[in-house]
Image (cartoon, rainbow, N blue to C red):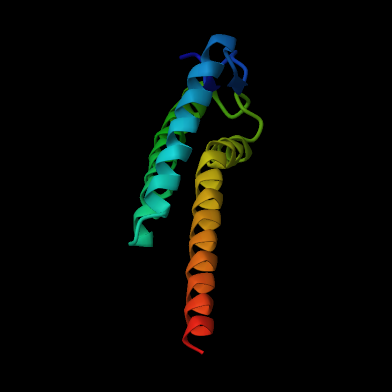
Length: 129
């Protein structure tokens, strides 16, 4: 896959390859479906596994990119990338959009589960009267 951030000299910072889009969308749909399944389980903490893994993955990639940018900047001089910190922060923020999406799905699922439980409890209380 050629889609993603590139911190090499002479390349655009971010590129999207058209043939990678269906793959990315399919993987995100599968991740959202798995997130819904895990978030609706009795133990709600299971739904935090995917966002946590995604956050760890992007943090590891950020660390690798920091090393790569530092080595390239040292080799080519400071004029290679005008503001490497800003580029790295942008890459980290954009790569965490799926993490935020998974957390939003988790919050919606847990909220719906709480409302459903509260509604059943209210019906039981009314039935007991």
